[in-house]
Length: 432
Ligand code: SAJ
Image (cartoon, rainbow, N blue to C red; front, top):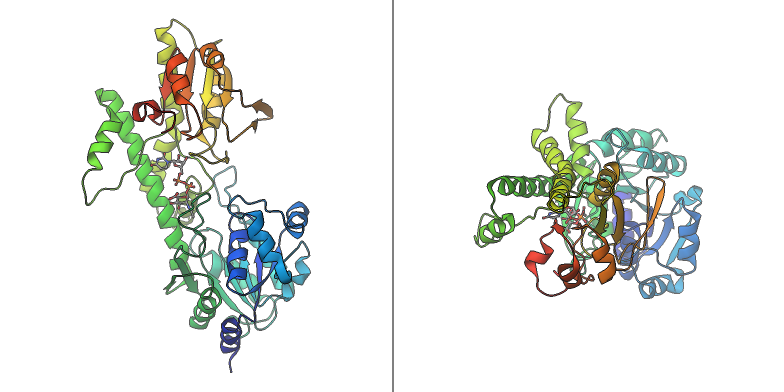
């Protein structure tokens, strides 16, 4: 029996110990799903607070309830550690670490590289390593493979290596880890076979592709698709503004086309830790091959420009009141990067606050999901949304269309409103 067959047989018997490096919004939901499928999981994280919390049965990930965690920890099937020397124990290791951008918008591969180095120290025959972090095409083959083979073991015979992009949409109650189809690509055919067998009990639909590069590109295509289409919607907002046409009416009417159209909406810009980041991984890789990914770059430019577009609208509203931006009171309504999340990473609200303060405005914010904001070394606290607070503002700019905000209170009391999400245009009630 080959090592691949041995691992597949163990997966079939659920007699595998699954290791997960990185117990965040991707790793922890995956751990819970694997345990529900009958596996045991040993989680690895560099943050002792995360490990201690999990050992106490406390979830730090919104999509994983304490009950889920308690259940997973029953009969000791979920353990967590910071001790990377224990990476020899698991038969399968999924790497779910961050892949941010450096300040020069280049891929920051440091998390993947340190996971690779830790794995090389403990790699043993009969293990499979699966990278899940979003990254540029070629990472698995060019970065991880040589690192792991520096152990002296050979891929496809001693150990196995695959790429399977995470597709977690935080807060999505319809699509979660088990029922979101999972793309898998292996360095060798046996790597693919083993990876599929390991995931199969925990994931409803697996989508094999021919190489790890194909799997890496699938994820980048998915998120670049969103960035480019959101960029088009934002450009339409600028076009309609110049033509004096209501862009929301135009998009709503276009969306009645039952085929060949997909609705995207203009907004304050692009936030989150996926969509503004992932396309830059592709652009960076292609620059190295002397190809300029013009669509990707242009969408990024249009999306990045949107905070400035909306600030001009604030200036227009203040002008109507014969007020300059300098010394004006502006209330920013919503700072999270999208509706009903508490995440502020890459949020365009941060750019809007910078631009307003840069022109001398007095800025306050209200966001029921973000009670405190640490930004550029300054601490802001969310103000309570009251008629007086709204009346105190010379202009209210709606940046995030949370459903738990009383927009009627804004409609009735604001001197002026800049509505980047067309919340007031969409609703007469209190939520979009
Ligand atoms: N946005 C717009 N207009 C739109 C849609 C989004 O301005 O029409 C803005 C949002 O406000 C946000 C940013 O773009 O600031 C990104 O929004 P998103 O809806 O793409 O949400 P994300 O960043 O949470 O993206 C995640 C991604 N999931 C993964 O990477 C696994 C993405 O692939 C999903 O398609 C997306 O969730 C989703 O569909 O909700």
